[in-house]
Image (cartoon, rainbow, N blue to C red; front, side, top):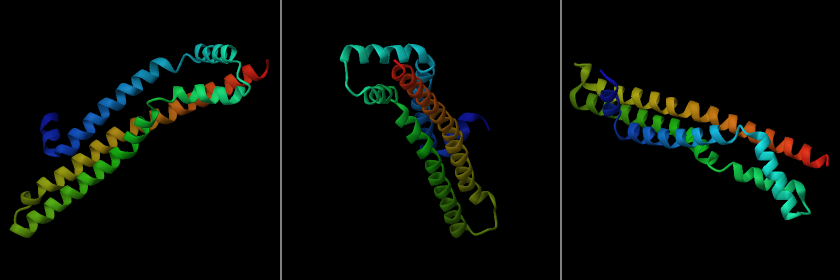
Length: 158
């Protein structure tokens, strides 16, 4: 069985998970290219603070860092929803298996194997989507915390 057959067998939930994966990885790639420039981001925050002459420096730093978090909520939501969609597929697959057993009995195991296949495929797909998104979200939050701390230290020392 090739990949497309597995995807087709998994049904609509697998297609939804693939779409979420594409959206999530697009955001992840965007963040991978924008966040690692910590010094440039801190200098940008410094410039905005100097031009705005804000009385609350730390609040302005937090505001600027919060703007850098754009898109991370989507990654977090994908990491949270993907295993739930996989679980939903599991329940649907098991239900289909029991439905097939109740109609035809247990004489032929191939009767309920389709439902079990759906259950396993959607569970696997949900986890494959969720795990990298969860790791990426934690990585980016860690980077943003580092940027915020460095900005507060550098700007607070002056």
